[in-house]
Image 1: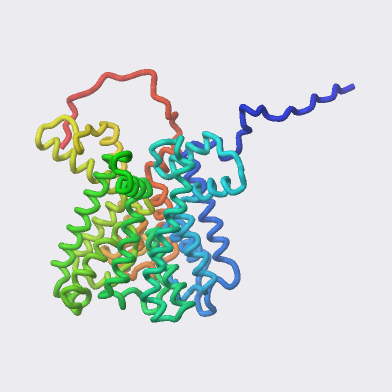
Image 2 (image 1 turned 90 degrees about the vertical axis):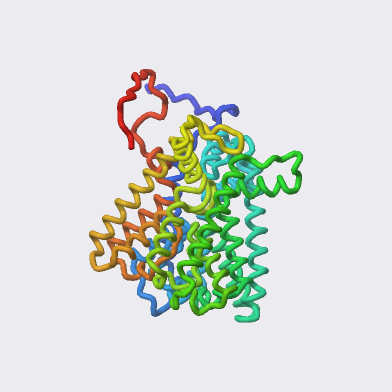
Length: 464
C-alpha cells in the first residue's frame, strides 16, 4: 500500500517563492523582456484596423515597425501618418512610450498599483534597467521618473498645441501635439504631422520645444533629477561628477554640431540655403540635436553634403547619455576615451575628472563598449552591402549607424531595403536598444565570478 504524500507546506514568509523571471540575471532579463515586447508589439500591429486600406505592409514590415517603436528608433518603411490609422498610430506611440521608460519600469509601476511585493532580486533587475546608483532607492525613484516624464510630456504637449491647434483645429491639434511630445521626449522620432517637419524649419516654438524634449530625454533620468534637486536644494544635493561630465560633453557636442552644420550647409540650396540667418541658425541647432538619438529632421537629410553626413554619422554613433532614452556609445564613454587618450599623451597615469579619479574599470568598460559597437556596426553594414548591392555605400552606412544607435534618421533609404536587409536592421535596433555589452553579458557562457587562478602579466606586447 502506497504511503500518502505529506501535504505541501506554504512557502516560508522569509523566503519568497522564486518566479520564472527571478532566475534571470539583470542583463538576461532586459534582453528577454524586450524580445517579448517586440513580439507583443508585432502581434498588435497585425490587428484589424491598424493600417489604412492602401498600405501594403507585410509581416516583416510590421515586425520592423514594432521593433523600431519599442526600441525607440523611428526608422519607418512607410510614412507613419499615411500608412497607419489613428488606432495604429496610437499603438506605435504607446510602444515607444513603453520602450522609452523601460518595460521593467512599467512592470514595477504595475506592482505598485496592485500592491504586489517587489523583492530584492527584482530591485536589482530594475536598477540594471535604469542605471540607478542605489538599489535601495529604486522604487521611490521609479515613481518620480513616471511623474517627471508625465509632467515633461504634458508641458511639451501644451507648448506644441499653441502651434498645432490653430493649424489643425482643437481635436487634431491636441493629438498632433501629444503624439510629437511623447515621440520627442522618448527620442522615438515618429512623425505623423501632414506634410512632415520640414514646414517648421524656421519655427522657433516647434524647434525649441521638440529640441528641449529631445535633450531632456537624452540626458537620462538620473541626471535630470540630480540637476533638478540641486537647483531646488543646492546645500543638500550636490551635482554629481557624472552629471557634470554629462552636461559638459552634451553642451560641447551641441555647440560643435551646430557650428559645423551651419558652416557646411549655409549655402546649400537643398537644406539651409533658402532660410534667412535666424532660420539657418535654428535649423542647424535642431539638426545638431536630433542625431543624439531623436530621429526628427526639418531639412532633407539626403541633400546634405558628404561632410555633413559624416558629422551626423559621428554624432549618431556617440548618441545620448547612459540611463536615457537614447542609444549610441554614450557621451560619458566618449568623455572617458578622450580623457584617457589625452592623459596618455601627457604622460599621466590616472584619469582625473573634476578633481576625482576615474576608476580603471570604467576606462576598460568605455573601450569595450566602443569596440563592441564598432564591430556591431561594421558587421551589420557588411551584411547590408551584401544583401542590398544596388543601394549606395553612404546610404547604407547612414542607415546602419542610425539603427544601431536607435536614432531613426534616414536618407529616405529604409523603404528601398529588401526583407533580408530589414531583418538585419531589426536585429540591429534590438541590440542597439539593450546595448551590446548587456547582450554579451546576458548570453555569455562563462561564469561571472572571478577566477581563483591569476596569471602573471605580460608587458612586452606592443600597442599603437
